[in-house]
Length: 216
Image: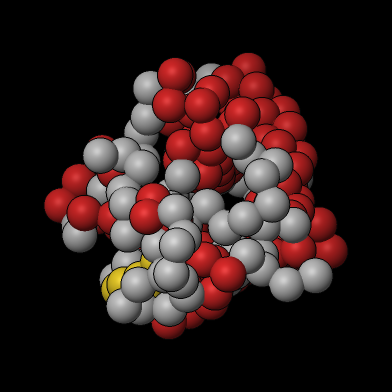
């Protein structure tokens, strides 16, 4: 099954007689630092999860992976405020009405051509950053009573708080895993159903989008 003609149109315009709102162009979208962050965060989260699940009893490497994730998240917060327009939080934090409107057309079998994160993608980005951040932060306070894998800040909280942090750290690991699975499923859905490649733009920085910005 081929993509619609207007979706195959490259930079410089769509096909004759096509809906002007579906004419496409290829633009530079994701900046190099954001792309490095994306893949580094994926590697850091994967490493932390694998080390926590299958690594040695001494979780020093797991902790270091967690520190790396926290550093990356700190960068993302700063970049979300001062980075290029597509990377800023203001570009993908939408009102409920816009999110609902996008969701109603989600299953249309054509590329969305969105200039950046679409409204549902924006919700997902926020949810993932919050979940990963919360899990990494709770890891700083855990105390599993094994005298080895004690978080660096556990000594500054009560025993009950450290136990609570450990419980949340474990629970949030499942939440993060579920969100990662949802992310992969969304990529597959967009590629196979909507004929839209979400991976290549995060490698090259360039994406084919509609000339008409739906946010305008």
